[in-house]
Length: 279
Length: 284
Image 1 (cartoon, each protein chain N blue to C red):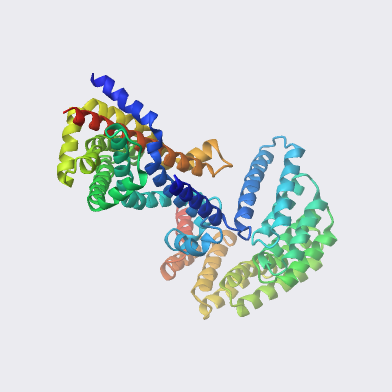
Image 2 (tube, rainbow over the protein chains, first blue to last red):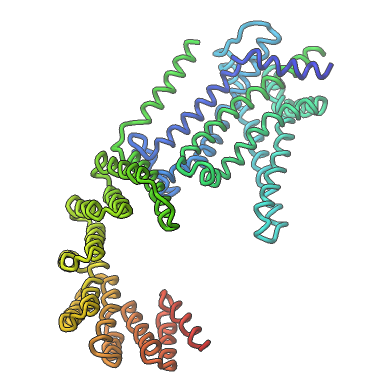
């Protein structure tokens, strides 16, 4: 019975792919951000952005091919702001869309969903902050432990990879625990902390499904993050005349983030609505 | 759906506007970097005596020519000419290489460093072709037009050495004397520290040839006692130490002067070199 529900939820996400729209908008923001920084060494964008790059990163990052080295950092910074500002609204709008499709059996009212999500911005923003703090700690603590434990510089690189691996595992657990929170907040009108508590409880009861769902999609994102960290080595080894490969990695990252976000949120929300609806 | 279409259209418009209509600098940088990378590979191949296809070189010539034609005012355009000349040299086409170097001097007459390097390469090409008269003329041209560049300062000493090598002892002696005068003038009158240091080193070499070690040391001591600035003073002391070390084989005096640099001018690179020399001397 449980297995049927898992596949039903993923099948639901596949069959109703048009619900991806809120995340598509988020991805378009990211692509625009990437495009703006990609064009930063050239007029007219350079008029505004070149002095910033010059001041904070150095003049050489305005020239080909070193400008590609600056892009991953700039895209990451942009992602922090874009996700803090809009991710909550996108998730809430997706949750509402799943609710309209699955429970109300009506067509999706995107504009109305966005409006309703915007009204919940304070709680969504707080949830985003909690998520971001969790993410930061998950990233930094294993790294600090490795730095503390590994004395020899020879083993530091291996140690860091170990730290990234543990960060990823903790991240999957944290996201799994929080993945239902927005649905509790939007659909069942719970408060912020009550939603987090309920989400954690629901995760506990559907441990395997949630972990499988989050892990299977986030592992692609994790692979791309590692590729981004090693971008210089990858380019030097496989594409020595093609530094533009950075754009391919960053574009793929945005695309797979869009896909992962959509499938994780829509499938988890579908499961929650079917389960809670059954009660 | 209407809103979404508008959103996507706006997104495309923003991206289109961002792509802009620049002056071509970025595209020139991109083309140059790609062509330059390929050239480095060819240079590596040449170093390892591997076979280089004519087509590879022709394709590169095309790439660099395209840069010089499409972006003639780009600040690194002279480097494209340089690379073109280098490829012609790889093709054993001295005439083609010389033409490219001449183009640099003609197109970028105000870029001293580039022009002087191009002239030097022309002179080297003449020398390789055993055309000493043209080489000498070119060297003299460097000395007249760009006397206070690194290559310009090298020329008087180099010419004197070449005359000596060619058995023209009288001409060589005169050239050494004239070079020494030039270097002494530069040490006295130049405002640039680089010019003074380079001139000092060449002046010492000339004096060693013309007047011997004692005279050279006396000249350097006179410099180290005068108000010529700490860097020049340090250079003078270092040269004294080197003369005692390598020419007179006087270990004690050499260590004394190396030590003097370490104590008096501990901040500079010469202090590090002096410490290394002292270590070497202590091993002997």
